[in-house]
Image (tube, rainbow, N blue to C red):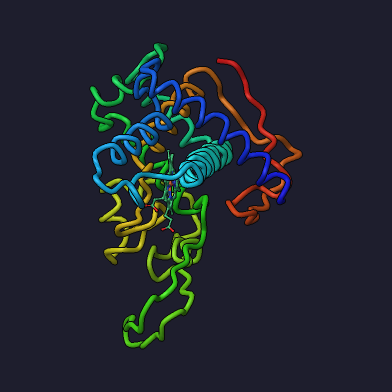
Length: 266
Ligand code: HEM
């Protein structure tokens, strides 16, 4: 573990130093997140009279890169993976989603402009499907928080330093919250949006909630919609007979024995 940590740190440090140099020489623009991070940090240091403790250190930028890679890559690929598994299990929803995509885009490549021109309204079924996948198979099933001072939560007083778990996976499968069909794949429950899917206000927080809510949630949904739309345009898919349904928490929620899918070119 330490070896991997050091190797990734060295790789990222090299990339950051190279980019910092190029930014200072004006050789590159703020064309990606790494440049934006370095540039805003350099500006903050430059503008401050006492540059101590302002801007980001290289170690902090390294941590941001790791966070964005893990939070952004693992999460969305897990969402897409379970979407393909569930649409393989529920062929009628695969058909409905494909119809919608073909109606909106035909065979042309769906891009961000296309999705925003259509205001995503026309991909309502795809959105419902993605929410229902995120409910049944949330990439991250547990959030944790430490109390930093004594506080009241409901009727309970918690002392400082208590670790509180917010069990997304359990809440997403709670019959009391979602109703009798809680274990069924029913994207229809999101037809009125997230707020109308349950009787409680804060039941669906697969992307977190409050000030630390996922910064990438809109990006993730757009990315997943474009990827799913392209797959639906060109392939139909079904589960391979070798697939064994065994969701399994390995930091994110993964199929324990893999997801063997058979794709048919359309
Ligand atoms: C299906 C996709 C995704 C899911 C389910 C997801 C889930 C979450 C959750 C639950 C949190 C809150 C963690 C907490 O409160 O402790 C979070 C935070 C975060 N996510 Fe995502 N995420 C997804 C996609 C992305 C993408 C695509 C990016 C970046 C491109 C991203 C970047 C982040 C970052 C930077 C944070 C930390 C925000 C902060 O602490 O202020 N996520 N995500």
